[in-house]
Image (cartoon, rainbow over all chains, first blue to last red; front, side, top):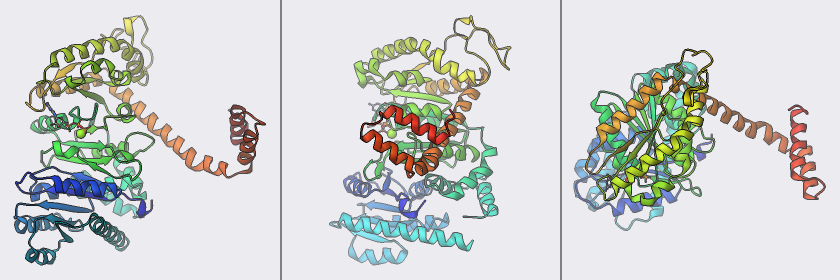
Length: 146
Length: 356
Ligand SMILES: Nc1nc2c(ncn2[C@@H]2O[C@H](COP(=O)(O)OP(=O)(O)OP(=O)(O)O)[C@@H](O)[C@H]2O)c(=O)[nH]1
Ligand SMILES: [Mg+2]
């Protein structure tokens, strides 16, 4: 089967203790409308549950929504756990309330993209598609080398 | 394509509990990767130990919530559990939000949950579901719980995959218990009435029990006998038929097998020990009566005939449709020189060289 037929799989997770999931649901819906399979976890996930779910579901990318201000704790931990589980090929993007000065820091840590309030759905879809393509490009290369 | 040694190593990892390899291989199956077929060749000899329990029922009945409780019951008893959760996806875009996991918030090294879009699983001729079950079986899971999309063909299709089928309904359905589709009543092995803390639960349960009795006879004669036929034994309703075949010493009478009705509430967490026991008892009796073997035999036959139909469509039929005969006969029907039924027969004869 051709790569273009492959379904893009995304995990959308809400990390932290706040109970607001409107934003994450809107993004999930938007990605689904763009033809992707979006696994939604619900509220109050931890870095451990996010990474375990992402691996079980073999997603191409994880979208994290945070409003609690704890992104500098949660995101690095998620990236670390992905590495620890040999799953760093799974990209991470995040959105929510994130101060500008933290964005550069998060990108340095290896996050694919940060979407602040007002980002367009089109940009998010583009980011996910790009991550998907890169991941399967790498997987194919890895196979040929093996 | 990977070489056999690499795929063999992958199979070994899966059997040793490597979740990452398992997950990727399931994606491979879903996407029809050629490597997945080779992998199956290595793993299939290790299948046959898992028991597959299907959960079906209307959207919102509480299938995911009920499975969440079943998961805990199995984990508490030290078993390894896998869940296949199917959610609807759009026919137009192929996309969808798969939300069953929201209700399944248990995490354990002995638990594996995988979400599927309905487009790729259960229903139609897609084989991803059957193969995923085989993979999980070889990976050493003791129980594989399958949540269907609560609508359409998949509700009934599940019987081809599951060793036992749990039908989840609710008192909300009110009068509709009587309107449960006949097919659903016939395939259910265990009936679970969820949300039983709601008013009307008693009456709904009473109606369910009545319906299961009404349908017991139909089941017995059809599906149940069907289960048996493949093991060489006949399900003798009324006891007047002689058992035959290899299991000739089977008892002549089997008491009517009326599916149990269990009331539960995922909200108040009640009734789940009873549900667990009902499911496990069902699996045990089916095994004792050699019904499981029959069901699995039917599954194999279903899989193989689906496979052939697809191969026919994708190979023989496609070629044939690009030929002259096809065009000519279509023209004749179009000009009303030949009726469609005779045209079909003529094409069939032409395609099969006149043989039946
Ligand atoms: N009152 C009450 N509500 C319940 C109970 N169990 C589940 N629910 C609610 O019913 C709704 C549907 O539950 P799910 O478990 O998602 O149902 P489902 O059958 O898996 O739904 P789909 O996968 O969408 O078809 C949720 O809002 C649950 O909170 C129960 O025992 N009592
Ligand atoms: Mg569900």
